[in-house]
Amino acid sequence: MSEEYFHGAQYKGTKNFRQQDVRTANATGFGAATDDYAERGIDLNEQLIRNKPATFFFRMKGDAMRDAGIFEGDVLIVDRSLKLANGKIIVAILNGELLVRRFHKNFSSAFLIPENNRYKAINLAEFSDFALWGVVTFSIHQV
Image (tube, rainbow, N blue to C red; front, side):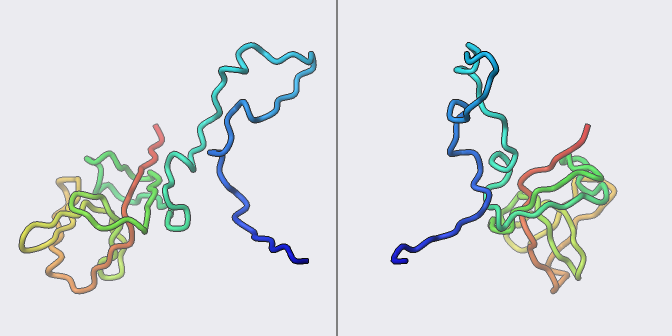
């Protein structure tokens, strides 16, 4: 028992494999000519998630970000490991409430800007209980 065994995550993604590495069974014993040129399927985990432990999914409620292309019922992919930056769409905690807004900072103050004319911008200088929850990286919209 001198060997040490290390256990990793069960799911390792599909980046290590190409379609040609995956064995296929066929009844005739001959592979199709197109098998040599086939590409593997799209793994949405690889495409949409950069940092798995820090990534969360939210369902959008409300229409405050309508003009940014985020609608009621859309699924938001939020990464908590990303830094707050000017112009990013974020999930913020303001007085205990989660809000999805665009962050804007100028020389003197910071604002949470809605992407809908029905809502007003929120000046963060007026609130003492503000925290960044995460940065929205993708929005999945059903057509």
